[in-house]
Image 1 (cartoon, rainbow, N blue to C red):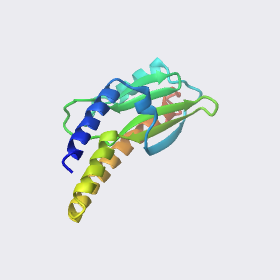
Image 2: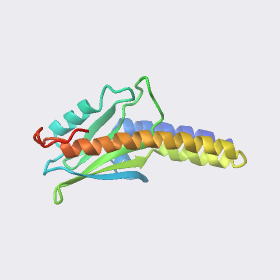
Image 3: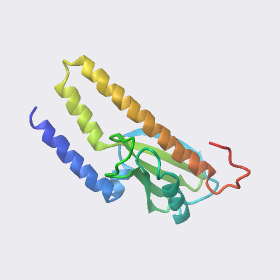
Image 4: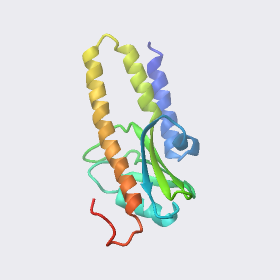
Length: 172
């Protein structure tokens, strides 16, 4: 069991490197925990949209969400690394926006963070007899998932309303 903790630490550092460098493989493949589609009115993921997303999801009580275009139809996003805010948490997902010009839809997908998966696997293997600790951990994970899913849903809603005439936009 003593070898599992160093493995989790290695996974954490590898993930920080891949996430921090906006690695395309890291953001496009993974275990999907969140999926939501948005109608986008024939827009591509251009520089104006990325700038608007970065502006819209900065400066809140929690960590900023930062966006980086990986291609004309792909945009990765995640909570800003090493940002100190009033409300913070260890994210369990990172996201990708995949735009399909044939249907004018963008899919907002949240993939599980590797550290989260490794941590949960090790925690479960080490605390099989501590049922009440499992309840606490899964309760905390549920709260973090709720917070992130709400934020990812806001990304989807922003994509739906971006670029529309203000008279057409429904208040959020």
